[in-house]
Image (cartoon, rainbow, N blue to C red; front, side, top):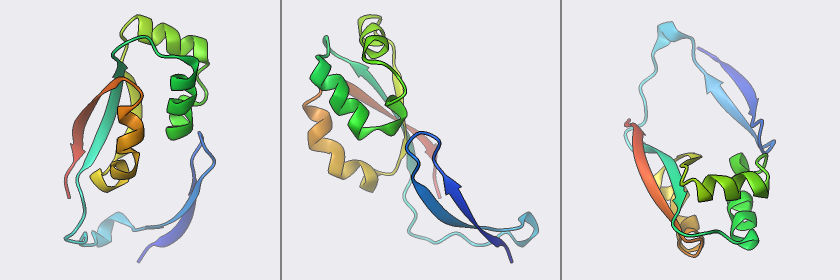
Length: 112
């Protein structure tokens, strides 16, 4: 009723083993799944090099961008998509995110 596959993140290299079901089986999802949010950030003020390094260490998706590119995005008030997370995944990051002087927007992308 499906296969086990190993998926690797192209940004950070993290690997996860997932059970992939054939579409005709349509398995029931667990009842306790959390909603998934797309996290979008924008700098409130001008970030320091330390702020940028902290953001890149928290969010692997930001690592390929140079500090200069992130500074430019901050100057132009561009939004940065940080990834998709559940509330429980964001909880441990809350205090670190507050200190970076960024505004966060959570956009609901999926409900179980």
